[in-house]
Amino acid sequence: MAEKVHPVPAGFHTLTPHLTVKGATEAIEFYKKAFGALILGVSKTPEGKVMHALLRIGDSNFMLNDEFPEWGGAQGPLSAGGTGVTLHIYIDDVDTWFKRAMAAGAKVKMPLMDAFWGSRYGQVTDPFGHQWSMATHTRDMTPQEMEEAAKEAMAEMARK
Image (cartoon, rainbow, N blue to C red; front, side, top):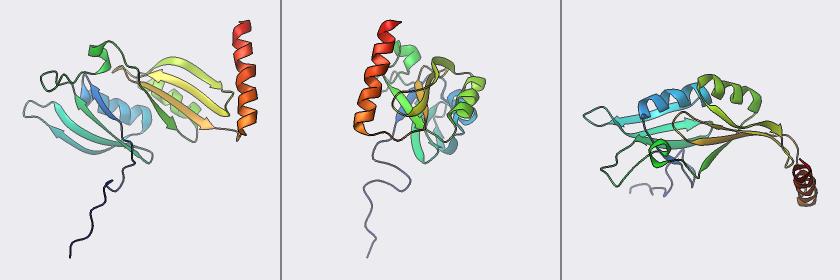
């Protein structure tokens, strides 16, 4: 008797980002350098465009492909005029990861800071228009502590 097929394949989580980029081959190299991504598989069209790639950062997979406007209008942020999505990475040393992303070609969107919610946190935009936030959790907080810290942070921002 055949084994039962799991509805979520091994190595995947319930939510898996799938990015469309202009220049997927270059993006794969960037994600390797910036975030230590591992390439799990790449399928290309006869013309050499990336039809589907599977990569892994830490314990999480993500997929990406080249732009194919002729196939349902698939465009990346550079062609579409930006993105409203930020991909978040929790890691053990955000300062090292942030510097590595910058060295690979990312641009600072939000400098690293010790955030009020108990994380060291910053944001970058990759050369393909996708936004990435990175953090290292530094302090466990109760909901009340977080609420108070948020009020203090908002009051400080209002004073500036």
